[in-house]
Image (cartoon, rainbow, N blue to C red; front, side, top):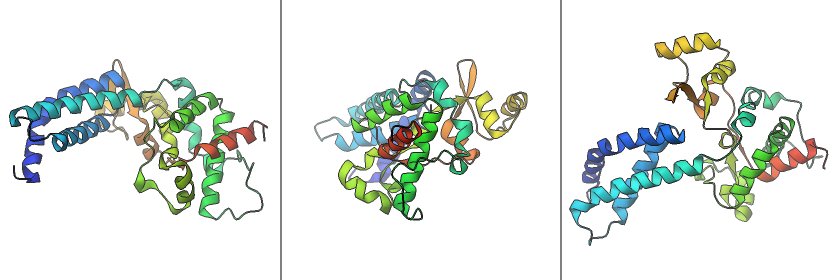
Length: 259
């Protein structure tokens, strides 16, 4: 191929039929968004291509790419599919929209400072989420997730999400200690909950799904429709903020009277 990336794209295109069926299988089994699965597969297939040395026969390279794509997609799906209490966390979504106007403010360490400062605003935001999690009895779930973060088992929000106010902490704890709040929620919610958040009657929601006009296209999983949480948050204008575990825990502690 003489290092011509166009040939690599052609090869990847030819492999897509081999990956399509497996991507649907992983989505159904693991309750993972199909786009996430296919993105993981593509990334793994390309990595397998780059890592194949010249001792590998060209005829074996496609098989190696497909195998790596499937293995990686399953592995990441299992990592995403954490054992959290869905019932607890789903209850938070209807209240998340009003969080920024909420009286649940935990000012355990915010005193006499300019809250217009980006670093302080970030801290206050995290503390408010901590207070919310405490108020709705989801703290055990959140603390378990924080333990995963600190153990290095969470990928973090990515470099693109880094802001100047995060740089000081990143130098100490690393960027992966930040996370999107949606990472705590289940990756999918049931259609009735999605309809409630969007202000649509449940019967009307099912009619709109059948007509293909529901705002967040659902996925059929078993005998029920599920809506991707992040897509739902986007449709409902619910902020998917980036927070730091320390701030969330400070806010929860303050709300619980520990500080």
